[in-house]
Amino acid sequence: AAPAWCWAVLVVAVAAGQTLNLAMYSAIGNAGVYYGFKLGREVPWASGFPFNVGLRHPQYVGVVLTLYGGLLVLLCEELAKIYFPQLVLVWAFMYVAMSAMEQVGDNDKTS
Image (cartoon, rainbow, N blue to C red; front, side, top):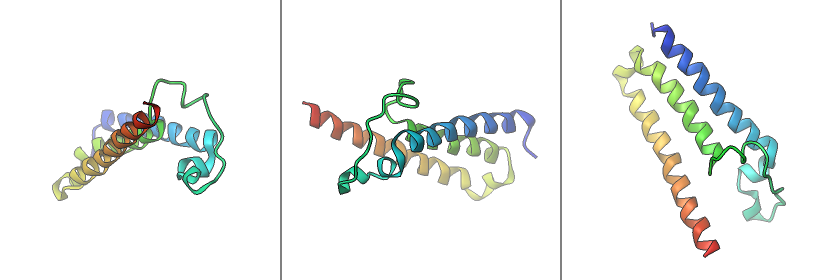
């Protein structure tokens, strides 16, 4: 069984991560979250939460917080023996990489 502090961090990280994710859906809707603007869908411009907390990609941060919250508990449990934490790290890295690629694409458009 994982120690209580692992579960506490899990709850805080998942709550923060899912708050960011839900706020994204609320702010820009499904079309915005799933790149509908690239398919000609109208996506509202949003400047409130979660875009006003200093995060370039709040949805990606939310997903990574959720993954890392679960990872911490898994590191404390038996699943660490079957390489599940490594899978979560790779999955989270893909979000970080995609965020970096989008940043480069955004910079190209503004220059």
